[in-house]
Length: 200
Image (cartoon, rainbow, N blue to C red; front, side, top):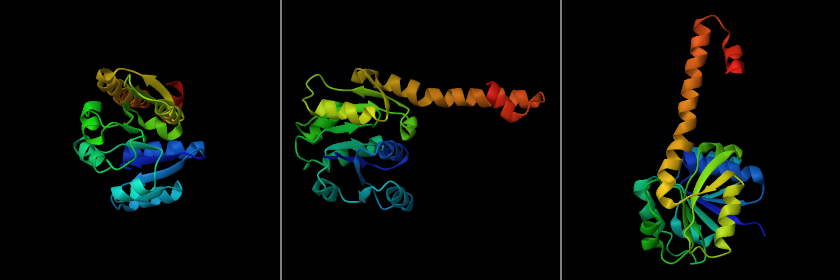
């Protein structure tokens, strides 16, 4: 049976996760997002069913829900999904929103938090994952399997996710800026930019 994976909030990170999951050809993709032409096109490209009403997503019966909504909206969005079966695992990628905050609105269900980075789009991501000790099976295995298809999963304490986000999310961007600066310096001294990139 093909698992149905729902991505709530198909923005930059949600879209990257959807692309990575689509690349695996292992999952049926569902999405929840306000009407948006970019998301409509992405859904068409990825053979993804996108709805704009939480009740409609609940009716599609996802096997796993991944929240990638902006942090200020995450708790309210999670609350709108409270009618999901209590066995449906939920993973949140909202920085700064704790498992405790989500548990307060989602009730007693398998719940984890994570910090992914955008290379998940090409299945080369680094994903910091905080699973609570009381995570029940098969939910924990499903979460690790799905996220593992997007790249390397590093299990950490929830308190360490912010550090993981800075290193895994911002770190590559800082390195990219440094590489651009090195390339600019090489070009300034007469080297062809493509050659400079090869050297770097």
